[in-house]
Image 1 (cartoon, rainbow, N blue to C red):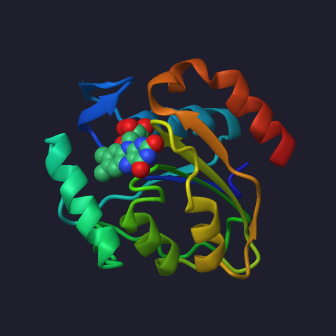
Image 2: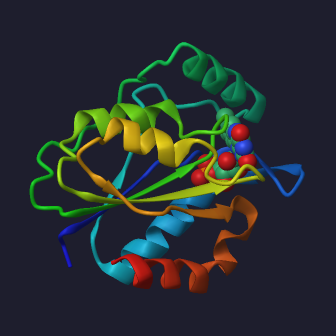
Length: 171
Ligand SMILES: Cc1cc2nc3c(=O)[nH]c(=O)nc-3n(C[C@H](O)[C@H](O)[C@H](O)COP(=O)(O)O)c2cc1C
């Protein structure tokens, strides 16, 4: 099925997982996005900013807070261009300050989402999807945004069956 796009944002480096700082060589969301791509065999696209976020957790948190407060749209390293061959976008991102990272806003505004089905998936440390589903709906007014899935970041590797049943129910 190459009519499915799996687009994800994920941060490597220090992360606050299960109440402590850990070093992630692969981000939680990246793990799920790859799991999904393997399952649905769609195209995988990583949303990356031109200026990478720091390794340091607190520095990243501070930058992300400012970007959210100022409603910024960080520039992306690469854009996707033509999305007309996709009818479904599985959008994976971490919860940053109760919504998705501002780079995901940049991404959604850079592609044509009209008439597409969007499945939001958010990894988090307690806030679930936060406001992110509402924000995706606001940015993609002519898309059909289905009920999102929230996964605790530190448990993504054990979430396979939950992810599969969510996909099964929505695809
Ligand atoms: C900048 C920043 C802000 C965050 N804000 C929240 C938050 O508001 N609520 C929450 O539950 N988790 C929050 N987290 C935790 C992440 O959502 C969680 O660790 C996620 O699984 C990280 O995914 P990743 O490894 O793919 O980047 C935040 C993490 C960062 C780096």
